[in-house]
Amino acid sequence: MYVGTDGLRQDEFLRGDRPKDLLRNSIVTPSLEAAILNGKYVNSIPLYRMEQEFQRNGVYISRQNMANWTILCAERYLKPVYDRLKEELFRYHVTQADETPVEVINDGRSAGSTSYMWVHRSGEYYKDRPVVLYEYQKTRHHKHPEEFYKGFKGILVTDGLAQYHLLEDHLEGLTNANCWAHARRDFSDAVKAIKDPELAKRSTAYQALVRIAAIYKLDESLKELTPRQRLKERQKHVKPLVEEYFAWVKDVLDSQLPKGATASGLHYSINQEKYLRVFLNDGEIPIDNSASERAIRTFCIGKKNWVFIDSVKGAEASAIIYSISETAKLNSLSTYNYFNHLLTELPKLIDREGNVSNAKALESLLPWAEELPDICRKPRR
Image 1: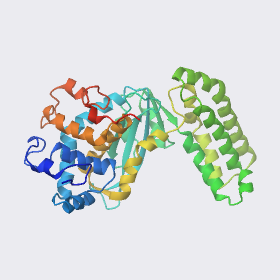
Image 2 (image 1 turned 120 degrees about the vertical axis):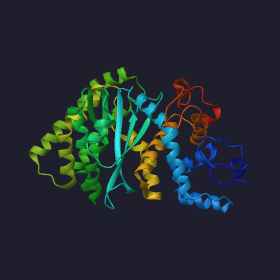
Image 3 (image 1 turned 180 degrees about the horizontal axis):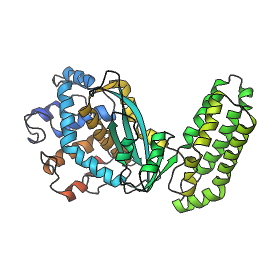
């Protein structure tokens, strides 16, 4: 009989052939925990709905048990994989970051306090061994990304949040580049607010969008080039368009008194000019931070379903698990089978203090490892 969570069978974890050392005195097996992780963190199914699904099939597992298993497995077994992925992330010349609010109920603060889930990923142009890392923090203070990126030398692509700009001053060797998608948002909002299509096309905001679209179109055509070729073409063809755009923005601000979203868009471009220009000087830097926004989208979808996280430990465990699942997806792995494989093999390598007994064996479990069984890999279309 099937329980109904990613093909897991009821008899699989009830017949007694489970490993005894995943979690002591617990019925949880690697396949059961993998199903729970895949259900919540990949398919955004809240634990209470999984609890109901189990019960409909005659299996009684409380959501509290599932939450406890998830936290313990993340802390004990998956954290070393997370730490190793961070080492890999820092090998890249370009990384990207974003953040989104989340409510954590029992975090020692008053009800309704806002926490943040940060996401850090390898640059969009790196197709080999891509990495996504989530990180939970109670606030949006710049000390959090500053601590995370300590030791990183390279380019960090973000939106225009001032906290990211401070990293350039505080961390030697780090350069902040900004996202052009954010540069166009106020203009897009301004055009949408104009009901008359003809009037909208004559607006300053529409002109700004046309200019930014031309920059995007030309840069998009360079995606398949090598970084060196891309840099050459950017300097020759994209840079003049960027120069024209900023000259136009300054001319508009000198000659007009725009208001509302249009004014916000113009001032944003001027205030962020230094950071918006960085991509012109390095062929490995993407023009925007859309890859980070895609990397955090699964979390945002899940957040709408489960609304809040119960505890700090739960938030930290979620960061670890989302990191592994999102990195697995980017590396074309089956997330359920990969979680199952990790939870089968990691107990053989990691003691109860979290120490890894065999670093080489840990390498063989990373999302790009050739040693991964074929069942972990998605079939190529």
